[in-house]
Image 1 (cartoon, chains in turn yellow, orange):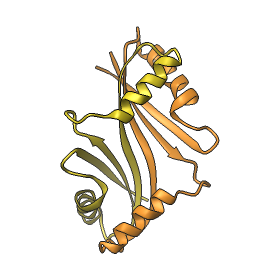
Image 2: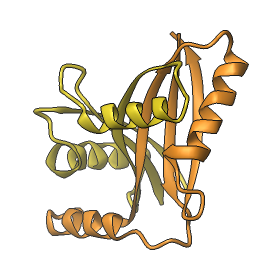
Image 3: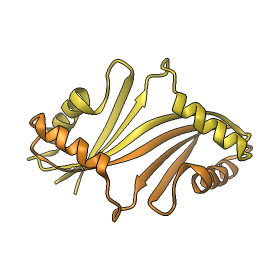
Length: 82
Length: 82
């Protein structure tokens, strides 16, 4: 069994209203040192594959087909055993 | 300037309908090796603090006050310079 930790983030040029709202909330709470916030997704996927390379290939395919929107998002991931 | 990478995840005992939906979508697309999906949030916060320890203390406070819901969520983070 493999565990993939997947991070999906908006591309730098894409507006991030959720991040702006969180920054506003933090500043209202007194966290005035905050310069910027970018919001993304974090996914943990457990999958059964024969080896690490096969698991990484499957996860890359999942990211491209469903987990990220390649027009506006980037993704990165790491796969560990267990 | 420091960059905090913050991961907010549901506690293991908490139901994750978003994760279940993503798992269903992956299986429909043919990713039958997927056993489970847990969905969380990933945040990148840039902040101006005098040193690493001060930045970490501020980020911990942000997580407790706004970025996570301690009843149902866990958080972890790392702070790097730049």
